[in-house]
Image 1 (cartoon, rainbow, N blue to C red):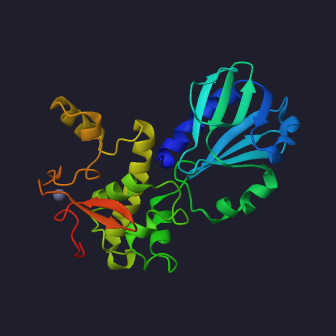
Image 2 (cartoon, rainbow, N blue to C red):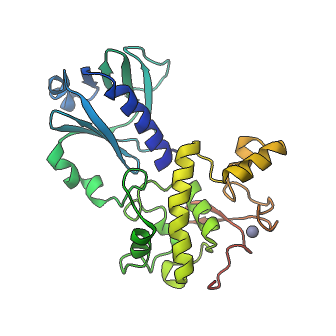
Amino acid sequence: MPEGPEIRRAADEVEKALQASMVLEVSFAFEVLQEYESLFANSEVVRVDTKGKAMLIRFNNGYTIYSHNQLYGKWYVRKSYNYPKTNRQLRLAIHNEKKSALLYSASDIEVLRDEEVDFHPFISKVGPDLLNEHVTVKDLTERFTSNRFCKRKWTSLLLDQAFLAGIGNYLRSEILFVAGIHPELRPIDCTTHQIEKAAEAVITLMDRSYKTGGITVDAHLAERLKAKGEKRSQYRHFVFNREGKPCRVDGTEIRKITAASRRCYYCPTCQTKGRV
Ligand SMILES: [Zn+2]
C-alpha cells in the first residue's frame, strides 16, 4: 500500500509531465464530473500538491482536481494518448501534446474551485504533509506534546492522518525504532529528548523514503548490507518485516506485535519502556 513518500513521487512524475505544455484534454470516467471536462481544455497545470495520500492538481483556470488513491488507485505517465496494458479501470486522463497522466482504479476524484480546497472534508481534517510543506522539529514537538495528541499511543497517532499526513505502516515502525521509543508509549510518557528524536526521525525518514523510493535505513548501512549480498527487500528497513532477525544496532531479536490493528515491529532493547 502506498504511503506519503510514494504518493509524492507519483505527484512529481505527474507534475513534470503536465507542466511541460498546455492541456489538450481532460476526461473523467464518472458522469457527474464530465460536465467539467471543457473547463480544462487549453488550461495549464501550475503544480501538483500532496496531502498524505491525496493529490491536488492545481490548474491556472481557478480549478483543482482532487484525487485520493485509497488502497488501489495508481497513476501512470505515458506518451500522449498511450495507454498501459492493465485490467484496471481508467478514471481520469489528462493529456497534453507530449504526455498523458492517467489515474486508474481510484474512486475518490473531485473537481474543486481553488477556494473550496481548504474546506474539503479530507483536506480540512488531515495533518501537515512533510513532503509538501515546510515543517520543523519545533513544529512537530509542539504537535506531539499538544493536549489533543499527547495522551494517545504513538502507534495509533503515527497512523492517524489527522496527526501527520502520509505516514503508513512501515514508516510507523521505522520512526519508533530510530527514535528509540517503545510502541506501548504515548508522547506524554516520553522525555523531551525522546520527543525531539521522534520529530527528527519523522522528518529524516519521510524524506529518505521519498528520495530512495522506500528505503528507510541510511545510505551507509544500505551499502554495507548490499555488499554482504542482501537484496533490497532484506536491507531496506531497520525493523519492519524483520521479525526474529537480529537488530541492526545491537543484535537483539526483532519482535512483531499488532498495534492499532496493523503489524508493528520493534527492538526490545533499543526501544525500552523507560524514560531515556
Ligand atoms: Zn536493537
